[in-house]
Length: 306
Length: 284
Image (cartoon, rainbow over all chains, first blue to last red; front, side):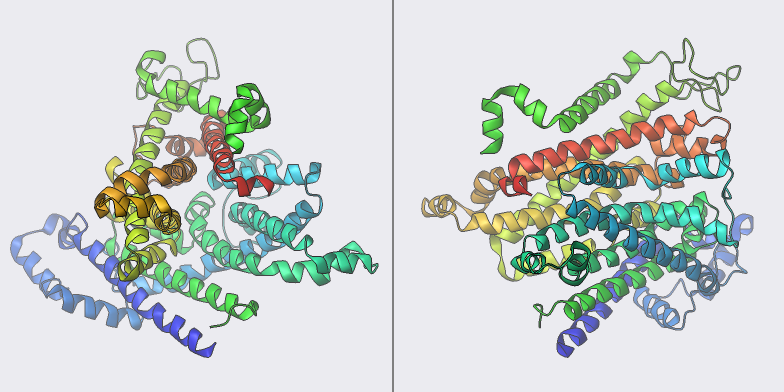
């Protein structure tokens, strides 16, 4: 198992470098010339050539990429093209924790609600409660998050005035963003939990536990949930990834100073150093999440041994 | 098989049992007809502004009212559907072609080639579709072609994986062995024997993918890196009217409802097709 973990962790490094290379090349071949953007109205061939040299943009691509990776390792991503006084590494340091915190809260909510709803649906299989939960799952997977956000803002912020429309810093500012981010993850954690629990419920040891007189809640907690947990844990990892991506909508709608809003603004302003860096950060995050999911899978399932 | 039994007992039985999917199908058919005939059924153009009639509620002439620029909402919904469906269908067509080709080649040849092709698929599947799409349109710009390419890029690995596993199973069947014994070339076996036998999976997968890709397009348009104004898309309409949510909620609710119903309908039809083609899923 240690060997598998080492192999899996070592595999993440070339994958990440490959993704970094793709992001670097995409930035390099993207339409638009950064030197022209930086100089603006002061553009002329001499200053452009000097600037290109200062930025190292006249060196061979391979050398530029090595320098890029070497700087990235020390968290130095250069400065923003659009606002040259911004250190991109500093922006990431300030905004990433905001997005990660939101995602963590959303995943916690989604895991609790999803498992509860999934168990409820599996236990009441075929009856009204199950049907209602299934309809909820279908809408949760089909209704886009910004529509959910619009409806919640309309009802809770504008109509009943219970919660702020947007803003950041106070505890009540977290409620709507977390609920919106948790929406889709609740739906598929419910779906996975339902099918996983429904399958375990047909096992002989569950019937045995019931027939020796154990009450239903005890059977669920002691026998069913433990055995049904594996696919659910994997889904929670996916949910974390989705919550991080969902921030692209939520941070824009609720005006939250997270990394996704920085990314959207950078894209709209074609600020390539920021776009590249944010994409690199996301790649690192997802490499780490996938690694964590794989490792938890090995750790939790005694039948998976490498 | 179940689907055949359903058909032999007539459409009535089928519709009664699969009524949610039937309802979804009717909604989609209506939507596609309206979108295709947009210039004929709308009395206006999607960008004509009537500055004397801003924010009008439903009334004669504008049966869904007008938006903040005095543009007819019904017209923009129909033209938005045209854009959304055209983008969604083109992307699904492109990703199905790539996915089927990739999956059949990997599954048929196996070995080292299969290994390389499927590791590329694994790599792409590991990243959320939304992030890949944002990466492509964010860096290369949000033209309609780039949006279609971005959507296709996010969806084809899933198709390739499904097709490959089916082809691996088909490869060992007698009719393939028979074709080989008759001296058919590899290309002929791929195109004449393998691809037709996975088409049912492609159709199911494509239906579900349309709904996923429409959602991604709407989200891209909503955050401003998808369809660009003045061309309408449902996601963009919601985004443009979001600031009038309090005073004129119908400007957000109408496109939101149409978008959600469309995605639900594709999911219902796709789910029903999945069940019809897979007898194992019926018992679950």
